[in-house]
Image (cartoon, rainbow, N blue to C red; front, side, top):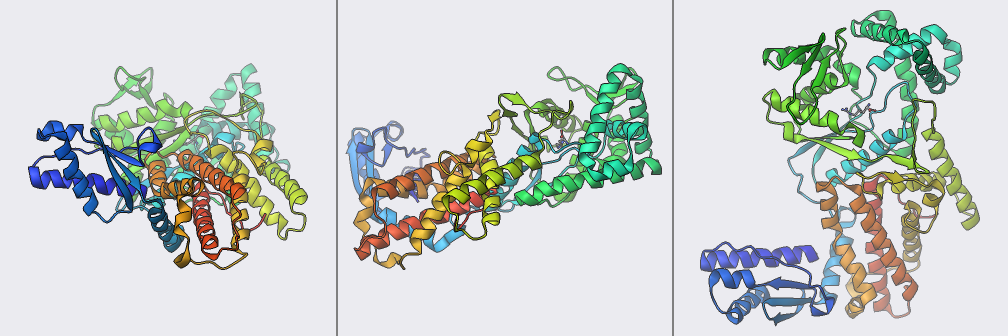
Length: 566
Ligand code: ARG
């Protein structure tokens, strides 16, 4: 609402100068440094300079224009070159609350994405390896960006681009043939397969010939050798089961699981096109494309004819452009693949297509535990499913002590544990490395997901105490600072969503929700909500209800479930 008021004043003034002076002037509506001066402030220097009229005349004219608008303003105060404006806090509050209570979970919906399609590539774990913590980040960040974009009217298409192709499968197959045993593996597929993979790397250090064998095995796969493909298929299915457990826990879904293997028969035509366009060049038996001074060349085909990660991504992006008609494609992938996506964009540009700038690498930092990266290669594996289960167990313990009589403890502990993990991640700006502390994240106080859920639950139980209506509120109540602070935040929800959407940054929303919850809890500590006075009680309840609506919707957009009890 406050943003709309600002926008409306800006638009009206600009229109006024255009119509009356035939001049385009850009008006800025800002917040004064000192809140005592006003809620918003408009500097008029630029208008004076352009129209060459005395300041008082300009200021009076502008004030007249603003006063004609039907806005909840209380006072317009010209001070020098500024027009300082005070809102009528009570009128504004009523408009904000009516807006939220009537729109409910649709409050904050935006139309900035109307008619636009965004394809998202996220999660994308590597089959036959333990689901890594980096893939968990990609999953949670991607999922939240998708939900935020949908709220802004974008049409989304989400792809889990499974890492189900590449030399690592050659390694896997060689290791399996040498040391594997199907029965043994079936007992605990991912762990046994991971062990095989780790063993391969250890032995290959001693015996480099193994790498050679692995490349040959992968070539056989690329040539569609049925025996190898059958093995691959089996490994793929077993691995997917593990990822699926994690997706089920997190409540994450995808529109497509077309992984790298899907593009096996779609690369030749792309390589052919590179050749026809004169971009492909031989280098020590391999096929490469020079990408200029700024980056190393892209390796398109190995000397043995094997394809590479970038070859598959190239084939995939053309397929996706054709199938999904995206206006933008987002790759939610760690910082360490920055160069890969720069190369992908550059390749498309060099091939003469105009959609390179629609490709965006949504990068994120490392997930650290005790300051160290977690790697799967050396067998130093943190099983993510176990991490999630641990969070759920810790949540259950907390619930047992805080609310032992609660029904559905299992269900609720699950929601709280997941909230801890997801929020513990999303509150950090994605581009940076993030330290993750499980115990801290599960707490019901502090900057945690459970704290937000708990605030919502607190409100839900207050609201059950008495019926209330917005029709009979004590409007004056909202002029008190601890009331109006909440109104201001509530009114900033729509612009927060848009900012999170345009920056592809769920942390913008996560931080906002923390401020809102903190602000509400301060209010709660200062004010008895269920008071005798009916009008004041209505004001308190309506305000609380609005906070609950925004909190719930905000949590949903982060991929976290809200609760009625905990
Ligand atoms: N599977 C890859 C990895 O784990 C991530 C894939 C990201 N998406 C893509 N289109 N390259 O490193």
